[in-house]
Image (tube, rainbow, N blue to C red; front, side, top):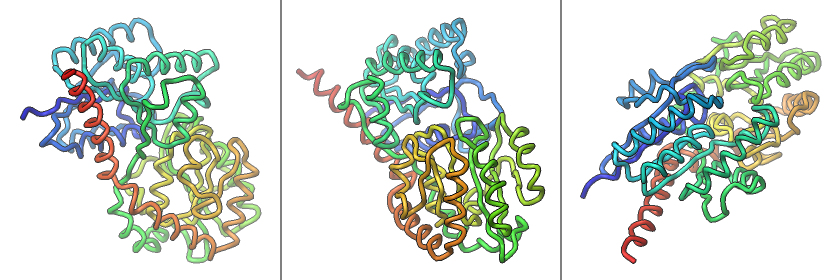
Length: 390
């Protein structure tokens, strides 16, 4: 029996949740059943690159040089033309696109190339916090147009489906919910080495550590975290702060946090996120818009409670009052109050962290995620085979 040929298409392989999701879906594919290719545009931007990790895993990157994140009519036309040719020549059975821009061009190319099965994962949405209103409406139109050429749309949370249907994107029966999994394995050791990591960060035994992890881009809301940190520091003098990641706002956020001196550390990108998560007393996720928030799963696996914004798919992951606290987005004072509340209640923090770990570890592994994605592939392929027999 010949293998099913699958092509994954994504705009870039920067450090981010969508890119990690795509990478692991390719890396953990059932190679007895599927033959999988990864197609990506050039990786540019201040967030850092996952390409060395992808190549180290033995996954070739099939480059599409004109596939870029922002609209650019000439480059988009060339990307569409090249993708159509590549997909037709590759004789793929299924194309799986990721994120809005690659999703639009990739699905259009797949249809033109006569690909029998098309799957799309938006990895959240660009309806708020990314672009100006005119560009946002263009992306909404692109998602509507692409949905008409899609067999299944995979959302990370039920909230993501609700948001897309509210914009008249696709039909309810097209959607499936599949979380973005994480590698659970490193977290038990990270928890065991918690004190060692804290000491390496310069956190004293009588101090508290509040952190954030992610791309330093406007949509992630870290400016509100830095603003809240200054208020938290005044009310809880024994608190330190840390942000892990990089992005276009790096210098701006560092300047804003400068009054806190050595109490606020920016680590840049790190490969030891499990250890850093476990070292924190509270993780803050101040996003303006978030498809799901893989960092929420990482915090749960590290038994670290969260303070997060009530936006996108976050409420589907955080049980307010049980695994963390939810606050309105764009509201530094609400972040402040929630963090201070948890700082003053160590037993509650520990209970929330344990509750989060008990929820996350059994459900949100990478292997479980990939099994569910491939089940969607099989569902579509079975439907297509049935249709051809009629």
